[in-house]
Image 1: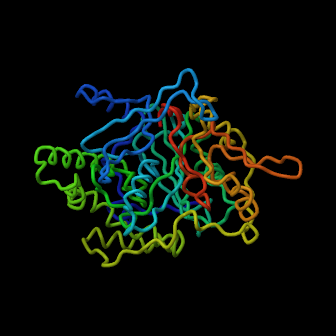
Image 2: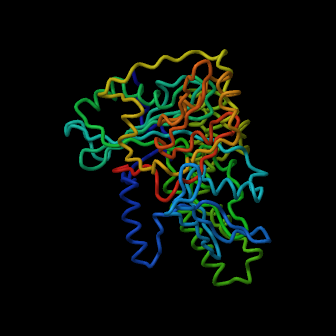
Image 3: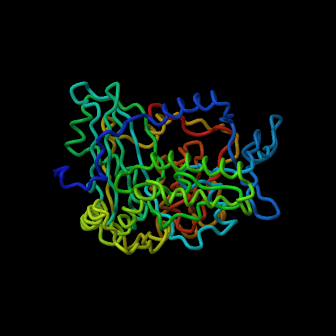
Length: 459
């Protein structure tokens, strides 16, 4: 069943009137042409591999990844070393859980006063509906089923042009049951009568998944550091109840550009190449108003569950709409990788087999992601300690990486009387969930060679 919440009861910030529904992939393609017309140079075939610092711990630029190494890391005949790209200021815009972001945060200790960052795993499929089922401009959100009350999450459905919809589902990654599979929860969501009716006779076109930030302003690192700044989801500027962050990412990029221009035009006002004006601009912009009003939503859901947490959060959002801000900010007690319970204490979860019409297995889904990884390139999913997957994750959690990965990258293989973890790196869709949820933080995601990875259409 389902129950609709009348729009009149919803806090004003949850309204989607006068917003735009677009494909971000197509928007970025258009923006790239606009940028190049303004003489911006775009290096789409290269990945930023690591940050560069000078002797004063100031960020001076980035190093691109090597090209032409084989799967063992050896140089081939096509080897080209990475190049250093230097800049007066470097704006880090990697999205959620960026590898360079992590290195900068650790190197400069930028998270000393921050709560742990929190995450959700967001899925999206693009479907072409039958014309009679398509309603351009319609936006629908849901929360609850099929997730249990102690697991946060919800869905979105956006109807846009050419009879297309974006169908999405987010599972909060602070869940505790190691038997839970976010991918299968998304598939099960599509079996709800309301969703099934919508998708009857429709065609699935694309599939993708990506981690999103959920920590709120209390989980931001220092936004500015010597030589650079974090913008968008590198900082964590997602509005959790709205499941939106693109507007804040764009605005933070504009404010970051203004701060850089100000610094270049008046260098004497800047000490240690630290763009403090950027942080000030953020605090005085509508980004801060947008996110400060919802800073307690995620902690409330984590503490009280989806139903009560959202009721309490709704009251707080209504108060914020009348400019009545509560004087406290709730904190996040632990990181997402610390929340799993022992498999022996967890309830089993039985997922139905995919029907191939509404629900699908992982391999048939990732075939729609247009993944391109050279088979002979080094694996970009690194195990810091090779023994932990079998000595720790396997006996305590029954290898949860098999289930939290939405692309079938991690597989337990039986070899006689022993087992081993097999990493199918060619399946990876770069969602970063393994880097986030691994209980021992033993999996490290690094950029693969060149422009490898999923190439989403219509996403």
